[in-house]
Length: 124
Length: 279
Image 1 (tube, each protein chain N blue to C red):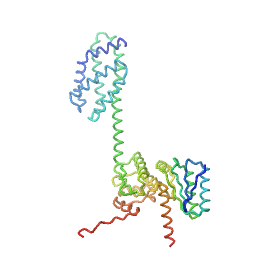
Image 2 (image 1 turned 120 degrees about the horizontal axis):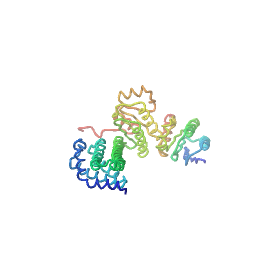
Image 3 (image 1 turned 45 degrees about the vertical axis):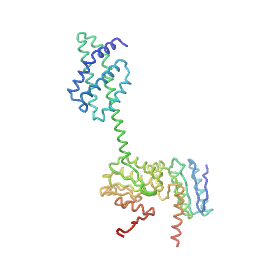
Image 4 (image 1 turned 60 degrees about the horizontal axis):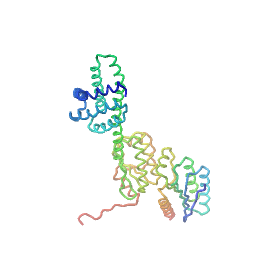
């Protein structure tokens, strides 16, 4: 099942609608990296609000996306992790270390905007 | 109904008054049910006796079970204990048995037959009442435990996007889990960006609980919230370091005041006095 990726200004927003197979996740990763390059996106938001479960492959995929996007000049933030999912993840030791997270889409956008401002300040 | 059983039940009904009195006398002698007055004991004794005989007569125990639970609900808050309840039921069993010995002492065969009918039923009754009492006790204990847990882990919003979780007392794994779940739900509901977890009121922490705390901090981060832990006592600080808990992700500040100030700073607040006093 292909995950829809929307372009919002300089950001890409991937909204996961339902549980994804490993193949779907890999495809999402490829699609995001390709589009970051094509549109020269500054930020990527992956919305996982609809996911009831996050397994180790999903976590690894999100980490990969974050690192690859950074290499291409883009920040990534994962939004919408549900309380039950967060709890299960920490119990299993799946920590998403080094990956930015935010409560929801609104917070995710605010986060990327802030990072953008910080970057500009550093540049000056 | 079997003739023997009906004979037994008639005997118990006819001798109701004196057997009840005998029972009440024995209860007073053994000094059970000290939490209740003599009048109360006699009133309950009457109900118990009648339920007892009815259970014997009908061979069904639902009514007795219901009565037992109801009775337990009333007397447990008065401080009546399990051994007292079991004690008085066994006393009644003895009183009734003695009356059977007295009645059939000249006919050993008949006595044996009557006891064959009486004993299984009497045992089942004693069982039913005792189990009913214990179940009621357990239900009350569970209820109280839950109430205490709810009371002691409030999540408080003190500013927009800022939550405080003051923890007091002993944290066991169950409570730690409940705490985490409650906090995560509150972060989502209040859209909190910073949480201050204050453990001033926690005396001691073992490796298990320390790990729960670390997990809570990690889980909160996954929801986009930063956690500041405040109020670590020297003992707990030592424990955490000794155990080797990974503290790199956990921001800590000495006391609650400092923690709140740091949280406000993170959220972009600055607190200023309204005016100089005396101006």
